[in-house]
Length: 83
Image 1 (spheres, rainbow, N blue to C red):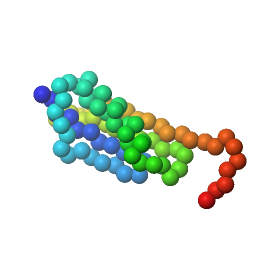
Image 2: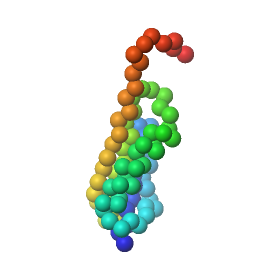
Image 3: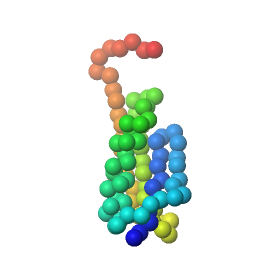
Image 4: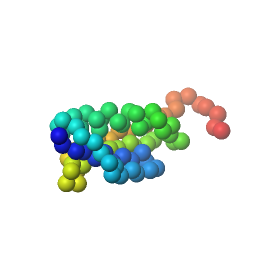
């Protein structure tokens, strides 16, 4: 079974995956990468209204085989008090 590594970046911290895990196919690795992005955004409350979360998938040889990103954009539409 192929082994894949998932490197992530939340805009403040980059993590290079040194362990990875086995998945049945490159398509399964793509699904895992896409599933990780909303979790990254949910787990890291942004301190600003714009942030990009990204993940890249490497194979056993270290070659990047897939990458994806999620842009979070928030904007006020009414006046609000600033803290």
